[in-house]
Length: 339
Image (cartoon, rainbow, N blue to C red):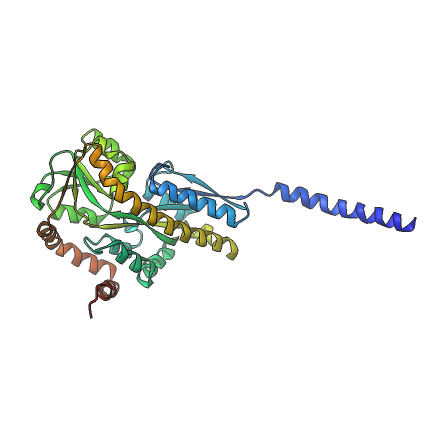
């Protein structure tokens, strides 16, 4: 009988202790993380954000959940960057070019014809040079996690085929809100107009601008073929995206939570690059099938374009710092077999 009473008492105590904790566990809500991006859900950007969200939820056992918000619903890149710095938003992925006003070293990635291939870009971005540039963001209230691929940028417009530099004369060309892009296209003869990406389709449709420049994937997913007739393959800039988080918010996470996000970011980077490159290989054919007239610049015309931009490159080198510029050129020379 004594044993029976003790068992009942022990059970009662266990229930009394367990019930509040069980209830408390049920009341704990997952950490909700707003992840903003500019393209639509069906884009390469959207697919990679979805994979990132799945990885985070799985690795955290549901304790961390990503709320993916695309189509620039949280504003253009510049607005989201300020929201991250102020701690009003947790995460985003966007262009490195729109960060130049915050961290001048980011202008390195805007250098015309910096990379000859995606392989070169991967090695530099994922290596010590890419990390050095990314680390500069922390001084401004942001933390960079990984670089994704936007891709090699090409020209589209509604006026004429661009087969030589002179064909750019007078074309109203939308560029990112970035001085390097502005100066580059002014130097090439275009009437460069800075405009947020979220306003671009409407501007093309209403002829506020004649053209724009983006990778094949973005041209396709954003349906620019509906308002643009000519696509000129120039590969003038390799454009990365960067996954960033609010430093205010990041510093409040545990080491385990930070690791979950970093591991998921690396997995999403590898997926996104593979997905983007596979899509780019198909996209050019899809754009042609949708009626775009496509031409490729000859090597001689590409060389003329590159030569015209020499002064722009010198300005970039001065702005990002000669040590960073020299280290980058040395690393590229080594990759290309230089001594």
